[in-house]
Amino acid sequence: MPRRTIERTGSVSGTGLHTGAATTATCRPAPAGRGIVLRRVDLAGVPEIPARVEQVTATERRTALGQGEQTIHTVEHLLAAVTALSIDDLIIDLDGPEPPILDGSFAPYLELLRGAGPVEQAGDPVFYRVQAPFQVTEGDSVYIVSPAKSLRITATIEWDHPLIRRQTGSYDIAEEPFAAELARARTFGFTSEVEALRAKGLLKGANTGNAVVLDDRGVVDGALRWPDEFVRHKA
Image (spheres, rainbow, N blue to C red):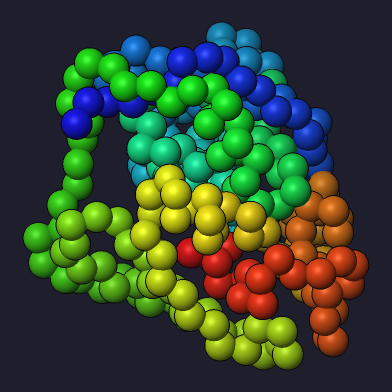
């Protein structure tokens, strides 16, 4: 199969979940072999940060790429949509430190990229194949990776909360199942954590319009999109 980019430029604007900064994210077509590259167009020299694991510098409550003032926070929602659409080459321009959180789900970014017209182009995409099962443990989290013909995520989460408890789901990561089963699942958090996280400089832009906020009993404002929206978002 050939590589994929987008045909047209598309943008969304809004507030960053953790930084609270007003930012516009603009997705642009990229030539074959360019890869997924984020650019801070608000900084001198327009520094470029490739979306690669070696660029990850923070993982507490978000994935951050880059260092110092060139850091880009909370890239995971946008990059999940990029992956679901099998886009290989893309330039993402940001005029701030964090893509907007929008409604807290992946759906606005999926709609943005679909509207920009995913298109095939010359060149061979890079495929990673797992040759043998392996396991990674980090804190309370355990990840088991096994060979498969395509990307499929089975996730289990557990929280001592009446709406969550233990939830498990299994999902194929391709455009249509992602759109139907995962895209609208929103990020979530607990009122008991807000003060401590804001003391760390996080959650400056969070509110009940861009996240599922939970107190001890249930959802603070609004309703869940699925009873197991929590594990869908984590997947």
